[in-house]
Image (cartoon, rainbow, N blue to C red; front, top):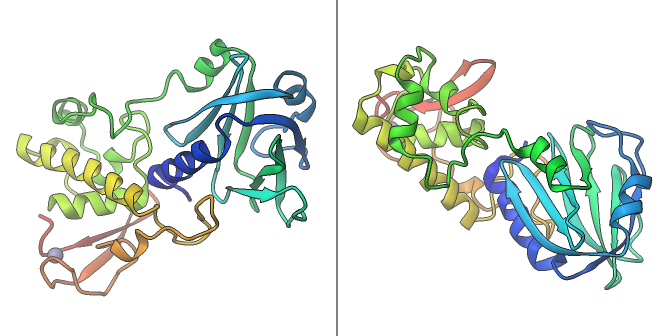
Length: 273
Ligand SMILES: [Zn+2]
């Protein structure tokens, strides 16, 4: 499942590829993804409009059009985007195509169809979709004081806590494990047991690991591909995720795998306390 660095990597590449282009037509080939895919509505308002901006909010990609409307894309579990030449044939699981005025097309592919392509005609509709999302981990308001306030009475394990989307958006399973390893904090520690210094270390580690992954094009565990089709290069830099039984790159201890809230957690028993 793509997490924040993967979606940010795609957003940046998409910005270079489609800003300034005119959306000549939208084609929907599936009746529904997570929600119905309404090609007629999208074409009525978006056809022949130019794309003026591409941005990310949490794991949503927002394409803003010159009439103020927006197309919002979420990759769900297995969604991917790519740019094809006009003549390229459709592939299995290509569910939507945005034809562009330069002869290229932006293609949405999604084997499991848990993704989303939603048209927002107005800013109010966009706000209804994205307005209630919690703070971005790479933004200034995500501070040690902010997390400390959320942790104050929480008996929840810290790993589960930092993955709560109502606290901070976009920190998924891979980066929660990686950030706690960098911060030297055991994932099962109750959130409220962290000292001020430990909370600051967790916040710093979350920002650091996300930025580093974005720099390397994200992490490919299974389906994720960059817009270019390449895998993410951060995979080989993972310190604990998917490394159960291997040596910790920091202390030489063994990496262990446990299950928390139904998700696999990887950590080093020796250097995470
Ligand atoms: Zn270690």
